Length: 190
Image (cartoon, rainbow, N blue to C red; front, top):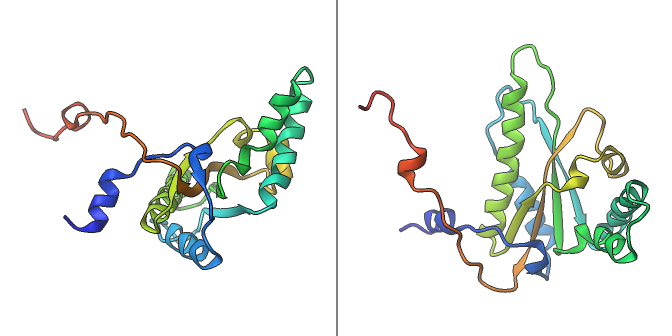
């Protein structure tokens, strides 16, 4: 079986806490982003962009997440706040995929949103192709306006996900996948 098909058939999300360094190099990050940019994009709108969190920037962004968490949860314990502070430091590299979908005279917004999802998916597969592992997450802070503002996400943009990238600490067990008979229909078949 060709190597690419094996990769596609065996990809498995790895929890960010189970991802170690070293992080991808600058050249590898450029490769990841180049591949993530090669997705279907009806109308060539580029309805997505990327925010790279690496090195100390992961902790700096985590301060913004922790501050928003404290504002919403004044009763939070120091351990809870610290957990939030480290949200983007669990993996050596985190890349946010930001959807810039909006009204267009010809291109439906739904197609633009799906293009951002395709960019996130391609980013995940590119990480695996380079020998890394990844996890695509949208946690509470992906929907929190104070956090989004602090991270530079504009009011008309949305986070499609934060893709955590690193080297797996251990081999992940696969989870059961749905049988194709449960999810596939053939039009016109009796």
